[in-house]
Image (cartoon, rainbow, N blue to C red; front, side, top):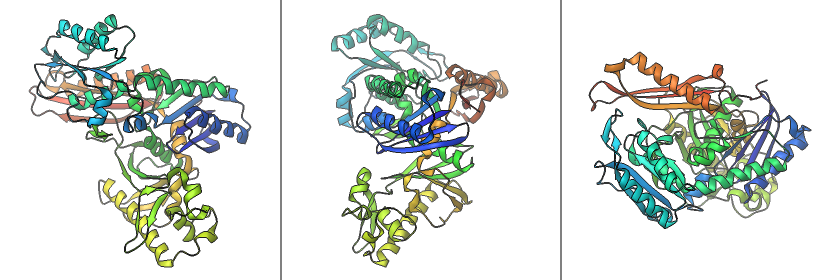
Length: 517
């Protein structure tokens, strides 16, 4: 048996799974001390199911904790930023386009060093170790606790970043080091941004992982726990401590993976309707379609793995304003839904009130929305469905109708057919799809490198890339026989001689030691 937990900004959801069967589910308010909410949710699972903690084989946790911390600029460390790329890139300084408030939180401790590689991995300039050592000494004098290292084309050849890490740790053995080659893709500025973000969360990641570990100890669960990442696969607790940014979009990813599992559909569009927003994305072969463009997080451009998600301001707590023209959201009563909305005795008209008043949802006190004019109800219902329709239309790649799967606590807002979709499905347990998605997450591996097809040939290049991705998944804990290729991309680099092609391969497999009964 295994437990899936999703720690959201408003609710902490949990499910207990026996193989493919859901034995129990629970939704508890998220607490300031995250572990308290996790303990409450899992305790309720044990009470409902009667299952003993000793029977649990694995615990999978999804969290938006690090995303919220970065967006809200809370608990960030000042970062020593080392770029190994001179004489290239000297005209563009690190963090040049960052919002000033985040840049101030991070500090302006930037050092540009000579070195780096060409796009095919050949030497661009040798590493200036003397300059690097001088930068490291200055970082040490400033008392910084964390450093981000980014090398020119280090995602193709990471040797220089690895050498820099050795020099840094030799001088400052207690400092946390983030290498960009372990996080981002080829684009230097976005990869550097992602590395700095990751480094700024170094202490918080250790603290959050410990809070998860402490919560499971309080529940007498001795099974290993994993944390889900942006692409719907799992990381070990130790890995998350090193790379917290890889969890940044795990919330919507978990919901989409859970939607695929609960509906049985591998290719569909998913709308995850929460309390404040609706996240809409496409499922491709059971996994979220990934964004192919740099993703903006808190005003900072990054290029690490992120699902292609459209967020719109519609949720179960969205505030409705009436007047000359009816409007919905983007403001929401959020976690105060049970106090502020009309059906619960509050004074604010929300979308949940409309669903009850229209007769297709049943909770709260119906008599408290009887006074709403029929036209207001009809206009609000039409606007809710129009917002979903527009979001679906923006995310589709063709005019062909596709199934729409509704998940999340706000899925009760939709009761009509949505244009552009073949059918609308709200599967059983839809309100805890995110926790289900966390519980079924797999171990993944990815490779993103440039090959010269003129030199090695296409077949050899693709086989090499697949083998490296599979090996990465096995190293992370996947069962070799279960690994499949989930995505493969070839992008010819027309401006580079030698038939250079950028090859990206993703694989995923079942977690070793997982209870797959």
